[in-house]
Each structure stands twice: as C-alpha cells, then as structure tokens.
Length: 259
Image 1 (cartoon, rainbow, N blue to C red):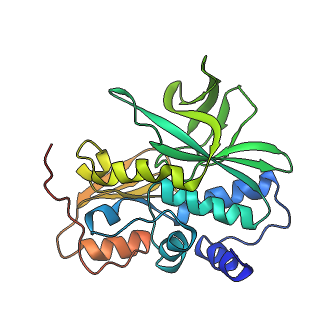
Image 2: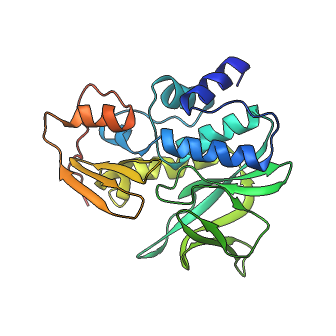
C-alpha cells in the first residue's frame, strides 16, 4: 500500500494517521474498523468472486465501501497496519461450534507487534472484543463485549475464551494469505458452511450493534435491549444503504443448496 491507498483506507474507517505504531493507536484503529466496516457475507449470495489479494481486498472494502468475512476483513486490516509501521502476522484458527472445532483455516486472526508489545487483533469475527487483546497475558482481560482470556493448550495452541466459553483455537505459527484460500473456498461453497446457509450484515455502533439478516433488522442498544422488525421487500436495499453504507443493485438471496 502506498500513501494514497493508506490515506483512503484511513478515510474509509474515519481514522487519522497515527504518529507512531503503538498500542493506543492500534486500539483506536481496531474500534474504528469495527464501527465502519461491516461483517457481511453478501458476496456469496450475489455471485461475487472473493479474492484474497491486496488490490481486490482494497477495491472491495475501501473502493466499494463494502465489508466481508474474516479472511477479507483481517486480511485488509493487516495491509493497513503494515503500511502504518506495525509488524503483523496472519494466524489460522478453528472456531468452536456445536460439533467441536471447525475446519483448518476456518478463521483468520492477527498477531500485531507494537512498540508496547504483542496483541491479538481481530476485526473479522462478528461479535467479539471491541479492542485488541494482550497476546502475552493469560489473565482475564475486560472489554465492553465481555471478559476475554487467552489459554494455552497442551499442543501449543491458544484458545480464545469469552466469558469462560471458548470461541476459537489459534495456531501460533504465522501463515501466508494464500494458505487461507482453501478455507475461504470451503466457506463459500460447502452446504455445511453457515455462510452459505444464511445472510448476515452486522456492524458495531457507538451505542450497540445493528444487524440485517435477510429481511430481519435487529438494533441492539447499550444495555442489550433489542429492537427487531421485518424489513419489506421495497425497503431492503435502503436498509443496507442507511445502516451499512452498502449500495447494492439487487437484494442478495440465499439460494437453495443440496445438503
């Protein structure tokens, strides 16, 4: 990323260029990203190709002012952080679900080295910590989204827990962006992937969260109160524009897939 691309990205998330790559600036960039770039899987249901390369990621998230899922969001955020002077490593994780751990390369997260030490950054896990988590701490870390803790496993991995419940298991070996292509492909095509089975577009707000799942709009307040309503067919595209800044030519619809 050159200076122009970096400035465009910072403008996209409403952030200023930090004076130095420290933890305070990382916290601010992390929160700004979550509040402006939605977690969404609309491309899967619009027939759009997902490419895990620098220019396509920037074209989508910055140029088209869209969002994405973990590979896109954390992949793009890594590009921005590196351009700002941070050392960033891509890490593979497997998400905990009802059936146990997910597939290899199920999720991408970031280990970020700052002037103040290492941090776990993740702007691509939907509902997760608002701020980066201290990588070298095994104590409980308080965050507006809950109490988080990093717990070592016997195999040398790290489990990320939220309010005592495991969220995902991180490998500590750094990976290249190309290694995530198989996981990205699986989530785009497998009938067992929850991304192929449903629509989601969700963004953190200053007072809570806004989520549009198909035609169900949910606005969550600061105290956890929920306002839920059904959006009419003639309101869907306007809802994407109003709440997420996403301009679409047609409504994304989940296609019937063999199971």
